[in-house]
View 1 (tube, one colour):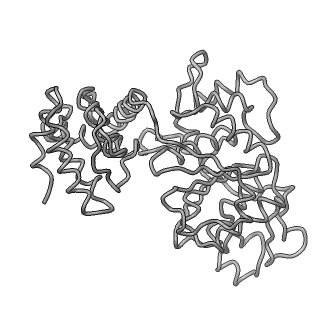
View 2 (cartoon, one colour; view 1 turned 45 degrees about the vertical axis):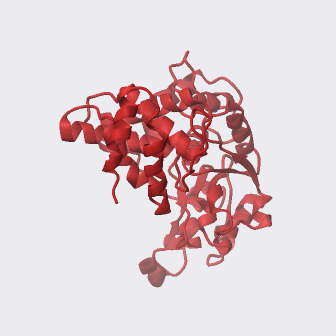
View 3 (cartoon, helix red, strand yellow; view 1 turned 180 degrees about the vertical axis):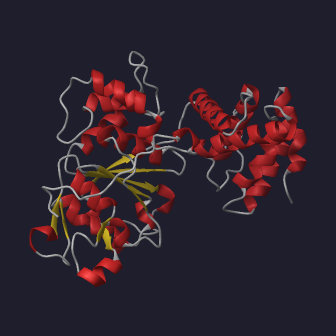
Length: 377
């Protein structure tokens, strides 16, 4: 196996019955949009890319003329910098708080650049180099010895041999020595297979190969990256959504999609979602809308968590009572989000509902205050 030939790997695409898959990959979900972008794409493309930089940008931020939806809410200049990085020989590192859509952005970029977002490594304490680079079919290894026939490519080897983008999720959750197996592929664009001999012992990266890694800022210090590996990445920070209306719209849209897939025909109530998103933002920042200081939760009160709770509220209302869900459902669903990391967070949530909700106007705010007894404990 060399960088001049592709491994004999059959890639099974999820197309038939994709509507039955809980979450198809980005290239499947947005296949029509990608096809329209490719058809209209006349700009120069970096070597090995499925789309030009301009078309890849439109895939992420949207294009009304081509009926391409906006998929990432954030600074468009971040997308520009990320795409230019992927066209260079440096990897892209997306860092930020949990729930800021780093993984989503990674998936969208890979789908736009390579047409395939599935070459993914999930980092963790048990992740090994075999899961990143390659492993062996031991039955064939014993029978035939080391050969390309007994070799089992992992995402990194496949990405290099096929010229595709490799995603490395939660890289700082991996041990330092495991992370450093990326050094040679990122710097020299080559992966050695010492068990093989001759030309097959070296895999040279084809045009289009690069790595997108993600890391949570809360994980810093767990297995911090070596300075050598950091030098091979460009770091980009993905920030939480600052604008209330933007975050509310995103939560409403994403929750509605999830509810439809869950068999719920009732649209989420806007007034309930306003209460939900406001609660999340205040518990996240430690400050109320009128400027009062309050206890800030240690749990992650991210936009992604807000979408999850909005989904649960809609499910609870629909399947228990045949309606869209209300503020009482918000309280019932909040406890599992607020009390993940610290038992004291549940007490902080209880104080928030008792002290910072009663003065607000509106039926849903009053219902939220009156439902505080639904918190466990």
